[in-house]
Length: 332
Image (cartoon, rainbow, N blue to C red; front, side, top):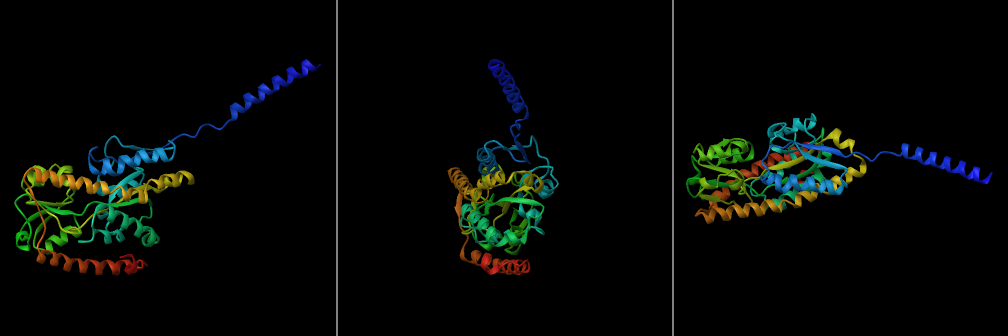
């Protein structure tokens, strides 16, 4: 009887173990995050922001969340807001100037003479967003993962040194739409607004005399052979702010733990990594001098004209920010 009882128990135990194995919850599948990939792999955005973030997210989530680059661009850079909110891609890097009617508060970081470095400007922008801007909900429809900025814009000249307003008068200069274009026009230049993809063609074919972009652009846009001098403005001619965005539904599909893990390697973490932009810019300027180019600064009258223009921009920003319920004076 005892043997038969033990045998029955053994059989029952085996059945229970088998049943338990059958009903064990499956290992949670990884969540893939599709990134709109529209830049070459060696572009500073890829090496400084995107590639490290991919690696960091995988590590932080223990492989549960896996960002992946699209095989080719799934949308053009100016349309990255639409690309992410419609779910064509889960993550994009957006130049905020392409959503100037929606994303207005970060413009304070783009002002002329306000960017001592990429790292300091990026850190200040993220801290200001979390303390002052978040409640304005300018990113409604997407999740803001990080804000960052580059080293400030300089004047890359293909014809000679630009140090005075006289040098700039009539000078045809490629610039980003918005602050840079308006400032240069006010200073007497002839700005040619374009996206970054057209920079090489414009300078290499002599369509423009120079290009207003950060110094890293000397290599990133392959224009080093066509540039003879760079005018570095203390604090910057202007700057451009960028947002790392995730589709809101994709963000909501992550567990609270995963969201916390992703943010641990986003936000301020990415802002601090912007010191790499500064390093790349410094290396590009060295490459220019190595090939015989010069690095100059504008004279006092040039700087005063930039400062005067900036006062008007700041007044406009204060009015706009106050209208959004922001303590604009404190945020500034």
